[in-house]
Image 1 (cartoon, rainbow over the protein chains, first blue to last red):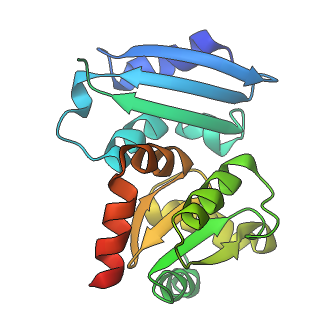
Image 2 (image 1 turned 60 degrees about the vertical axis):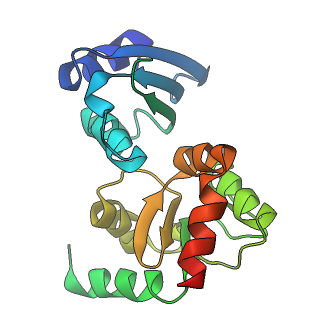
Length: 76
Length: 107
């Protein structure tokens, strides 16, 4: 079990400028996360997602977060 | 990673132009995310092979390390990692997926 706030803080550590929106899709381990960051500019989608996955590495590995639907983009 | 696992993975992803590591199989995906990928590829009429990671713990962990990608499903096109469910959905919606797959299959 991990809170939306904890997920936000973890991502912020890697991407300080990011605007992050976390939705719990059920049970606290199925999350939908939307991340907007300047850091993503020029990166492929795979690279963008790898940055976010990197920030949540331990939580994904331990399956604290079981499923993560991720959306990444740069600020409009 | 064990070199036997690595060569097993490389053999799989090069065995077919489109290859998917998923939970379950095409007919019975065992996870919503894996199901998304199967449905998308089917709707584009793509021919692809799959590997059920639930059947092999070593491949299940190995593939995550191989691509530096912590989740399943994983889609490989011409031996290269293309993305997981979210990326496939996003590329599908933008029309980019069809184009990329057609180019990859034609070359």
